Length: 82
Image (cartoon, rainbow, N blue to C red):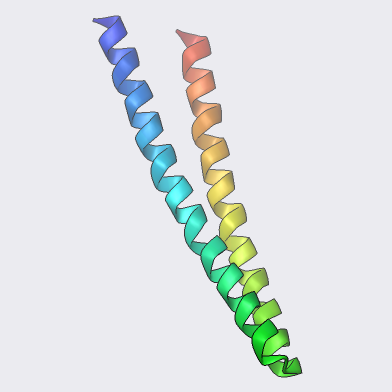
């Protein structure tokens, strides 16, 4: 019974990590596209706007990574307490 509980917890962690990684990919894609488009236009204002948006997306990525770290730390604490 304990093995099944551990297995369920592992599956749940993997599913949560998958969602968090998906959330991380979204801002990465936005960041890449914005920077590429600003490079194509070559206009100073477009580049400055792309940099502002890139910084915003970096914030989203840091939040997603923080969430993943919290999930892993919780899993480690749970495993250590068993």
